[in-house]
Image (cartoon, rainbow, N blue to C red):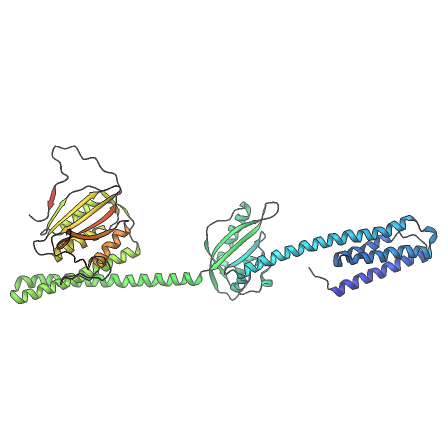
Amino acid sequence: MTTLTENQRVAIIMALLAISVFLTYYFHAILMLGTVFSHFFYLPIILTALWWEKRSVLVAIFLGGLVVISSLLYRPDILTLNDYGRALMFVVIAFVVASLSEQLKGREQEVKKQRDLAQRYLDVAGVLFVVINADHTIRLVNRHGCELLGYREEELLGKDWFTTVIPEAFREARRQVFDAAIASGTASPNRRENPVVTRNGDELILAWQDTVLTGDDGRPIGLVGSGADITDRIRAEEALRVAHDEANLYLDIMAHDINNANAVALGYTDLLVEGLEGKEREMVRKLRGGVSRSIEIIQNVSTIRRLHSHETATRPVDLDAVIRAEIAHHPDAGIIYEGKSVRVTADDLLPEVFTNLIGNSIKFGDPEVGVRVRVEEGNGTVEVSVEDTGPGVPDAVKPTLFTRFVRGTTARSGKGLGLYIARMLITRYGGSIRVEDRVPGHPECGAVFRFTLLRSDRPREPPVSSAPTTGRAISARP
């Protein structure tokens, strides 16, 4: 809508006043009639009141005086009380319309102030804000939205939102979602990723959320939407995923090829050990130990990768079966275990804990080292202990023993990953792990590793049998 300038308004009022003077003269002096034309006088009075409020009183006084003076000069015989009343009515109308105009302008100023304040709030926001009418046209957009899309505000207002900023491939689907929200009066409360296209043709991804805008009658009239530009984050995540997949591919290839090479090396070292004596045989045994450590490193790296990738989900696991399976891997070791049927919350990586703890006890102990595994049930938890009669763990090492790359003090200490992996797994399962002296105050008498797991079942009733099968000690060494 075109707004008149101040000069144009003055020109209109002066023209109307001139017409009023001419009509007064024409009706009184030429036609010798009464002031039947005076209804025309309300036009300049009302317009002046709307444009300049109280100045309309001056116009009303002028026109009222014009009616009375003209009648006195040209037709004093028809001058009645009605003419004075008409002149007074001009002034009253001027006052009333001027007062209403002042109130209306005051409300308009207040609304404009509130609108400008809201617009400033929207402009300083770091996300796109837009109001879309029910007919798909843009009613309001903030400054950041204009900068993001590459348009000026006047280039967006009144334009079809979907035709202007939504990529063609998504346009119809997004329009249907919008129309459904308007029809139902409810928009999806969840944030979603929606693409938009800028003026330059670049496609951006917005984290989008909207809500239905209702009118005074409560009926939906549009949607208020906000979108944060997450294009760089999405692209970075995609690049990271590609790099992660590529790294895993290389790691899988490397682990497969190295394991194959290690298997061949182990086979040949076993053959050499049988055919050599003395110093040469000892050298081959050391070579075999190095190959075994290589296999252990690859296994540890694979376990850490599975931990970080969350390939497995926790579930009920038979703890007794896991322990028995690990003991079976060491048929020549003296491992004592009293069977305990209990299910815990873990995953397929739980055997790694026992592989590291039992394996360390055997590796760092002497050939006659004794290992005992205990399982004790508590209130919702299970405590597992792995005890050994080996060299123990010095007090100075205990605080950092489960830290990555912290090694023991013996010559056979590993790379510092085994116990770190054990702690990561136990923490993942909701438990904790610690190391203590098997004989309190005497580290040299062996160590005991204790860790807790969450139970996933209730205590079972022991089976009725004349010959109980639980509670029997199991030894891997005959």
